[in-house]
Image (tube, rainbow, N blue to C red; front, side):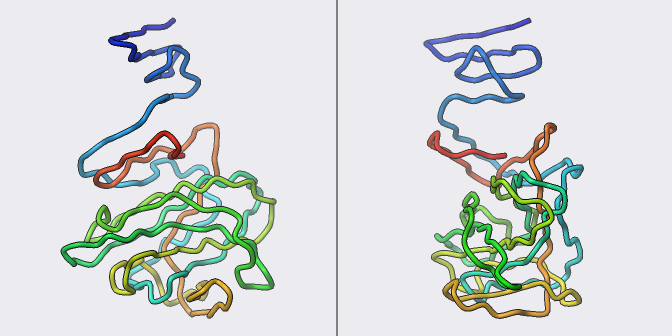
Length: 219
């Protein structure tokens, strides 16, 4: 069955359990064929944990991003379809922050990051909580099973003490770099979830004001 409402060329359609905006034939649970804009106080997170590739859930130490590139290694296990990464982040209480953070996926090269394979979605610093929360970065890539990869957090237009990531110092799984060429190993690990895409999908919402121009996607 299908129910469609259209005004001035705009369409809201519900078809066999799928909801479409801007289309009368939605192919997904929510299928938007237009630009997006939303405002409010939301937090990006994933509510379904049945598709976790890797995780490290201990924390308690706020790691400031001393270097422009910092991150951790994970193994893909049996998964072959990366969907994204969730990190526990807070920002400083400075009045105005104009930079951003995002994640990169790297191959492994003898225990350190090798080549950049993919870039994730961007999170602007002024949308990050000052007390800390989970934030989800979409990062789609076809993985090779049972292979090591690196998730690297990149900061741009920000000082080292502008952004902090929850971490633990009892696990050694962290590298840092100023330029992406020379890597420093550190005895710590960020708090994270790495997610695979599944038929159930991922459920997320954004922190603060989110806008898209039709060329971006949240997975």
